[in-house]
Image (cartoon, rainbow, N blue to C red; front, top):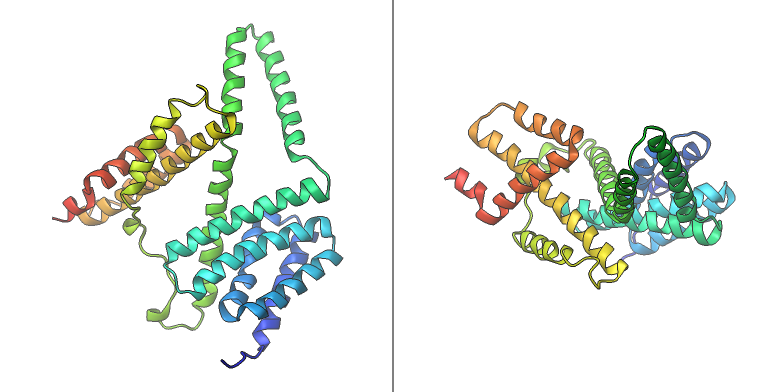
Length: 311
């Protein structure tokens, strides 16, 4: 097997990454750069063999050690892990949704790597800092409720709900990773489609065709049964894991329900205002919106509702 030569675009991708890294360091644009930085890495992995990518990775890590390592190293690790997983899926010509799933895993691993870097290398405890902020907020809330004459039970209820939200941090991390992976993949597709013919374009399938396997419903109901026993002799870590998986599957089924609304609108020729209203309702009233979408998703998966609509 012949060795693939290093072309000009190899150095161009490295240069683009370094420019984006410098911009993210010296300008307060880290939120935007998080989904732009992986794109050169995606292109390197897609277009070059693993040995070439390893050379690029070592070069990027070496530069990040020289320029404000406390900020550049975490950003570089996140870009390498997320961009590497997306690029590998593109190289293997996976389905766009599979690429999205790979990117989500990459971003999760990247965020975890950043957490470990801050904890172990910078010796900063994010958990302690966060809990101190929570304690201060709870103390202010308790004083405010006391001044308003609220009962102590109300404060205990707020504290319990806050503790439940803290336990769901892994779900929030996965959702954030899904969003960043989707945006990164979308921008990558835009770059790759430059000059391509329409038949060779990288695109996402229509959202109305978004479907999960029926097994996800069974997994959801099994986890629902397990949630009934959380706290009853079940360890805190196991209980937290069950709750996070349960809520994560619930959100995925809600996505299925939202895609069903798009599918119904298309098949029945209804106004596009219906899915727009569903999205706005979910954003403004997430608890109610996700609950309704989850019901639609369960019905769709459990009773093959789309197949019935097409008949």
